[in-house]
Amino acid sequence: MSLMHYTRDNMAGLLRGHDINPTHQRIEIAHALFSRQEHLSADQVMAIVNTRHSETSKATVYNTLKLFLEKGLVREVIVDPSKVFFDPNTTPHHHIYEVDSGKLSDIDAEHVHISGLPPLPDNMVTEGIDLIVRVRRKA
Amino acid sequence: MSLMHYTRDNMAGLLRGHDINPTHQRIEIAHALFSRQEHLSADQVMAIVNTRHSETSKATVYNTLKLFLEKGLVREVIVDPSKVFFDPNTTPHHHIYEVDSGKLSDIDAEHVHISGLPPLPDNMVTEGIDLIVRVRRKA
DNA sequence: TCAGCAATCTGGACTTTGTCTAATTTCCGG
DNA sequence: CCGGAAATTAGACAAAGTCCAGATTGCTGA
Image (cartoon, rainbow over all chains, first blue to last red; front, side, top):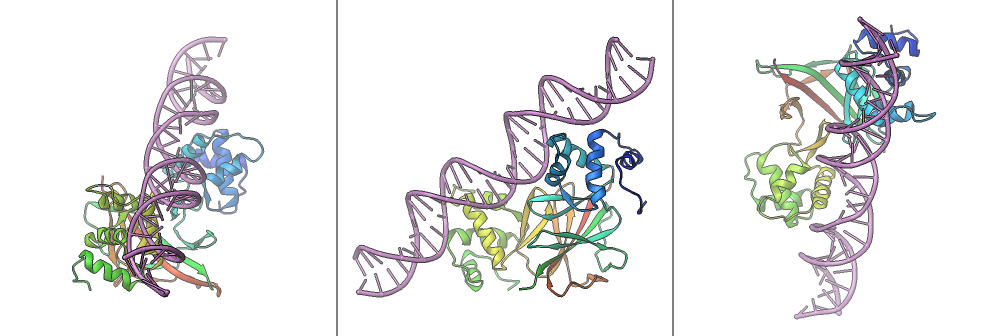
């Protein structure tokens, strides 16, 4: 899986595997995210998908990204107040955010350990833990 | 300090101590944040400050919050893609975010330990570490 | 006191991100 | 080939935040 080629055909399989009907637009959007393995905003996805000629509408890009999110195909990363990033890496990991450049990169969660968090009330469940290291280029 | 009353007069002192010229509007905004000790969005601040009759413009609220941020008087909490929260607590601490209700609360950082983070490149410095526990009400 | 100057504040136009809707297109089973 | 469900579309709309040019405020020094 980690070595697979992110061809459009493989995208169709990936989508089906996540219970998503693989339409032309959905394949293109998945391909944009997975072939790059980068964090992209909705805007960026739209730009990539419509490079040649306008093919996919804004509404579809937003609908599709939300669908991918619900189906667990991508993850949402909230670091910049002005836009949300979508992350094709759904394995447990954290993020480093370069404040000046806006560059976002992954930290594997395997070696990171977080201890001492207070217990949650009984009626609550953890949905996820986001750890973001904000860094800046030294002066 | 932790036991002080957040009177408007004390706000003026607080602002001066952070190298901020204490104007009427700035005092009101600081008072809104510090007397409540809550996480407020710009919108909420504006609503509070203008309860009686409109006194402070949107531009001033945004300018002032940005100024407070630069001067280290408040902290920014980015958890909700649609709005930024401002946190009058600048001591090291983390956050619990209730996804459904939007409720945000503090976790004291004193007992929380994070280990195993990879070293940063030489030319980078950490500006801060944000740890957000996203929770949901059990079904 | 008061003229002058810098800092601050203001309304409102504007931008950007994202949502909504009603109408169309696509796709599939029979 | 037909009919309906699922998906897509354009474009209007909403909300958060920025920007600007003009008005206010409040010193400061003569």
